[in-house]
Image (tube, rainbow, N blue to C red; front, top):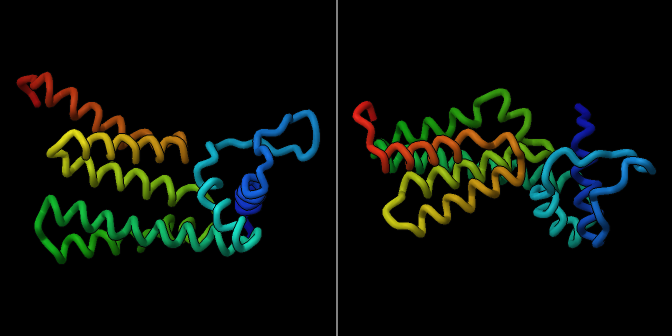
Length: 171
């Protein structure tokens, strides 16, 4: 299966690894538009600098963060439920999704954004000190700077903090 987005991610990572810009004028060739922030490409550019421009590098990066995401889901549930079996099943169900199986093997930004979001949720769920809240906010910022649509978890946590502070009767 071919996915044109993979080539664009790799091209931008290659450009970054060589110190070239990725935000080019749209009035001259190549006519490409950068529709996501360059966080995935920045991560990938470190590997491209060492091993050269290969799609396999981005695919390995995506698979790796997908596996870490499965672990994070299990860890979050383990903290909340204390049920080992349920936590492991939840992490495995994530990878069983057709959407995740399709996108996790491509050199694309999606799984890195999910990884950052889940990392933010893990630290938010362990919010016993301001440091964890700060770390959570950093991971959420990473998710938003990887993919702008990764706004649901940070917004939900922010609303939870506001409602916890205001303590309305219905909350």
